[in-house]
Length: 343
Image 1 (cartoon, helix red, strand yellow):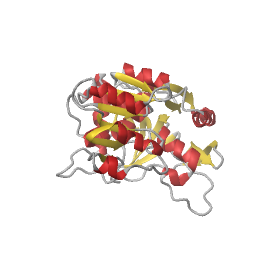
Image 2 (image 1 turned 90 degrees about the vertical axis):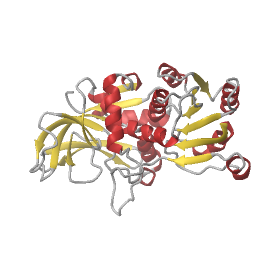
Image 3 (image 1 turned 90 degrees about the horizontal axis):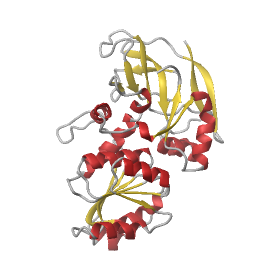
Image 4 (image 1 turned 120 degrees about the horizontal axis):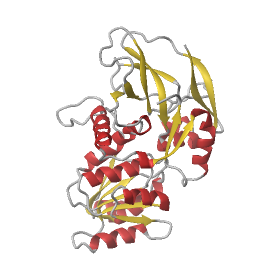
């Protein structure tokens, strides 16, 4: 069948192009995509810095790429041997930005989750980023009443704020440069907000926490920004024997004081990428699938709020304008969803 997909060319040129998709083979599912969402961190890395920043190894002759990994739609055809889903069911997939996708259920790590009836296609897309945020919160091993700061109020930062709230963190400090995003974080449960363009975020975090009479500095800091160089500031804002969880995907390098901060204050830095997290094992039961489905359940119950974070719902034909807007400024947008058909 002839379908459409977004192709990303050099110099930030994005084109909707037709492509041929075969019928589903054995263990494959054909999904008609209703919505695909932009993963701003990963995809803007691609737009700004090329395929290597997205994790793609370019091949000679490759002129364009099809990226993205968050989509929802309806099952329209099944290959032989498929019993996990039925035609007509709404599902979350790891599809790129395209009107249809083939999902191979025989591959480890395949994304295919049923969407609860009371969760919209738009919101369900972001369960995949919810998986990232939830893995970071799990790795932080948050405790009730633990002082937490989250730097970067993009979608992963907003989800981290909500999941830290559900884990009992207090105080819960949101840091960003954009007042609108800080307002969203406050509505989602942040107890304090800091606009780092107007305040010294490190000094303010240490003040907030010391006034509680427990520790000075945040006991856990989530780095959810695209700016690698702020790592030293995060070390300074961290309490002794605190943790920094690198949940964002910042390209580039950072310079830190190893002896004065990392060594003498015994601070831990943990990177979050979820490699090899598709199968449970005895020492870590929380797979990516389990995290996604937990997020979908919390969306259904109303404890994980996604709809207020979606700022743009546009037809896929407006993709060029959306990526240009996002590349030009970090303000004025948050969750962006493309429509491919009726939801």
